[in-house]
Image (cartoon, rainbow, N blue to C red; front, side):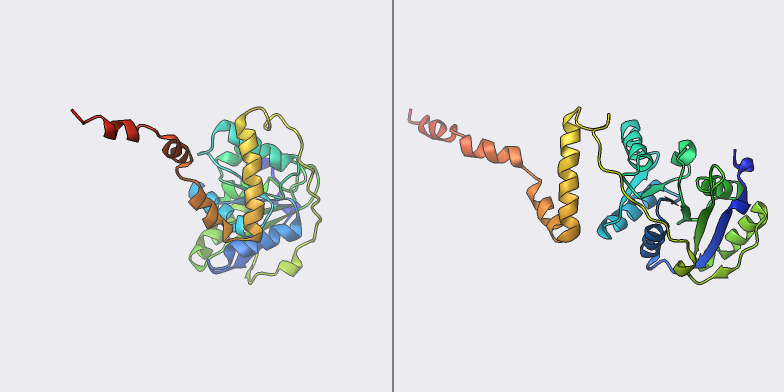
Length: 239
């Protein structure tokens, strides 16, 4: 449990930030630190940060309680197998995370209390290694984070962001593999198409709008072209 986690094996940073640029900073921290987990309070927060990071072409996967079990398994496999640098997760979904070599934990949103801070932070600095824990603190969250520090037994200053103070660690993505989550169903093929589409959209962002226009009534088009009922119906009322 969280009580077993030693706060001494981690470097703790509490950075004063504004909400603007928060996602960019989180992405930059993960780029520098390598394998990272970013914690958000809500499912919507996870999805929102995921959307912002996809625009920055970051290597990430998401995990929250609103996802189907198969999606969660696929997401966890992607992170644990080293195919994604970052896991963006909620507290509840993170309960079962047991991955070694996580270099950094980022508290994008504040944890509920000291116990939750320990539990989140304990995803790094495992098996005798060291780790980095960064809390992104809005002005309105100062008091809460001070209370968390007291509960956890650490004393850290609230400073401006200092990414240069972070230890740089390389992340080499693992090549995609034929796993049990791919290729068995049609979904697997559509995921590959989606991945290709997202790669394109990071290069040409405007293509997102184009793909939205394309979705729509594909089936309908075919039916309209082949419809032959119109002729005979007009010819009938001669009597």
